[in-house]
Length: 362
Image (cartoon, rainbow, N blue to C red; front, side):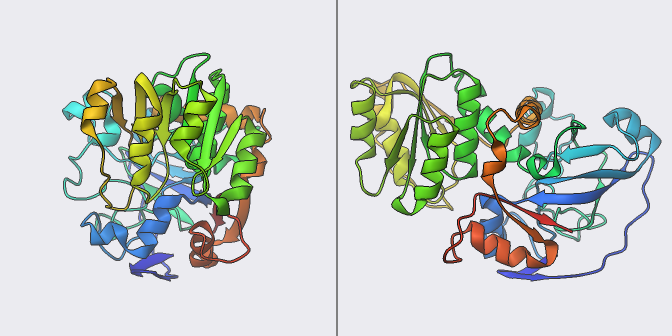
């Protein structure tokens, strides 16, 4: 499925290029969707100058190695027939960010755009860069994760949602045993944060959502959150302070998409000396915050972009162990031809449909 314009996908047949010694070919079994797919479909990627049409979307693919060059197979540690999950980012491996382990922040391959599977225009190289397809041609700088043999495909497609929760709510803020964590937003990343916090031994998890998110808030409680706040009916900051005895949360993870007001809520709801992680994209909408309050409270304010190797490995372990009945997060599965409909469900544009984790099957 090729995106050729804002809100326009079309099916195309594209020749699969030959695989070189340092490359591979992934036969896609399924591709997960996330909120950034919604923004991309609406035209947000192109309108910000981060890509151009035509492009093949899809940056959460899992599949089987169908072909692999000798050098690539040795480097990735895979052979034909292995099941893998693909990290979206492509990096140079030699810049300061790559050498410091921040390879997801590399800007060398495409300085003016997103260097990632699902976002590269088809004019870049061979064009087979997205998960909305039967195959992906694997670039030499690809990062792969072997899937456990026992991990069902239905769960494997949620690897990025869980990895986001691991890095953003645990690794980046250095969440500790016994902490209180406020998760703003109860979509797939928010629920992934609940799961990660529970794995990390967080003593109190508070989740926010809107009245229309009742299904997701109930699921957050079932997954281990202790409190759910309906943000458009309650005062989020007042409720957090009430729950914590006036102290505030040790960590606040803002995952609320397109809602800039949650940034100021996070600053007000975190404890003195606490940490706020911003990972929910606001679609270009600027947040208004009281920087004096950040200073007086000595808040650590962190941006979070993407997941990272260790988070992906932990996510696959969590999914494989499946101690939290994670199939509850998978709400929809569609053939590739229904990609636009799947995106509409995830966006909340289809009445009567509650979408959390969705995936496409070629």
